[in-house]
Image (cartoon, rainbow, N blue to C red; front, side, top):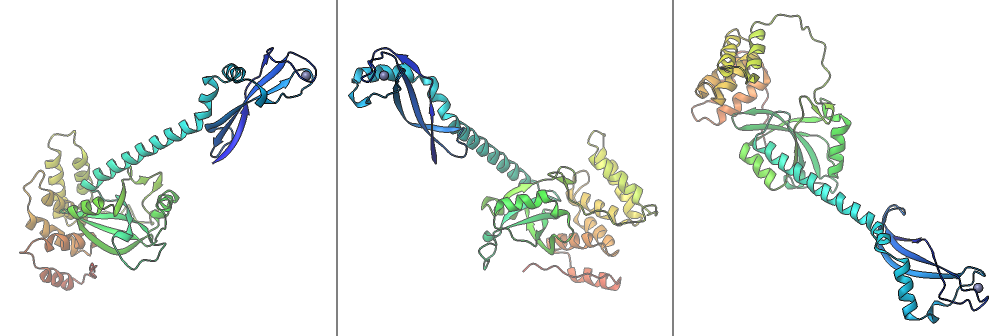
Length: 348
Ligand SMILES: [Zn+2]
C-alpha cells in the first residue's frame, strides 16, 4: 500500500490576525492523506487530514499549535465535508465490486462445471489438478487438461494432455492459444471413468473446472485439426442414411424423430456403413425410443470393429466388460481372423 495526498479548495478566514504583517485575511486549506494500491489517482481510503493556514498578504504561516481548539474545530467543519471523503474510498469500492464480481463468476463456473459433470459430452474439457490423482510429481507439475473422447453406456473415455502446467491460469491460456487443436496435444493413453467416478473426481476438486465447447469451438478456437485432403466425392453405401439419421436424432421438433433416426441408422448399418452401425448401437444402448438391447448393441459394434474402426472397438470393449455373458476372447479372435490391427489401451 502506498500513500499520497490531495489538497481541498481553500477558504478565507477573517478571524486571525497575522503576527508579521497584521493582515486579517488568511487562506485555509485542507490536506487529506490517502492510501492507494496501483493508481495514485484512485484512492482506496483516507488515512489522515490536516489544515494549513497562510497569511494572504505576506504568506507567513501561523503556528497551528498556538491556535485555540474551538478555532480549529470550526476550521475543520468549514474545510472538510463528507463529500470530500467519499471519493477517497473509490478504490476500495471498486475493489469490493471486483471481488463480488470475481466470486460471482467463480460461482457460475462451479455451477456450470457441476452441470457438465452430471451430463458428460464428447469434447468436454476437464481442468485437472493432477496432484490429487498421481504421486511422485515434480513441484511444477500441478495441472493438466483432459478431454472426453468417447461416451459409451455410462463410461467416459478421457485422454490427458501431455503437458503439465504450474498454474491454473496457464491451463486457461493454452485453451485460448489454440494449441488444443494440435492432434498431438493429447496423449494416446485412454482412461475410462464411470459417470459416478467423474462426479467423485469433481467433488474432490481433482476436476476443478469443466468447459464445454460451443459447437466445435472453445473460446473461439477450433477443436478439430485442420482437415486432411480427402476424396469427399467417393460414394459410401449407407453414408446418406447415416447423415439422415443424425439429422433426425437432433430434430426434436419432428414427431417420432427418434423412430425415424433409428430406421435410418438401421438401414445404414445393414448396408455395412461403420458409422451407421455405431450410431445404431448407441441407440440400442441408450434405449430411448427402442428397448435397450445390449446384445444388439454388441452385434453392431462388432460389425463396425471388423472394419478396423477404432472407436467401435473401444466401445465394444467398454460394453463387453460390463456384461458377464460377453466374452472378450471371442471378440479378439474375430478381429484377428479378420486381420484387424488393434492394440489394447490398458489402464494401469
Ligand atoms: Zn501577514
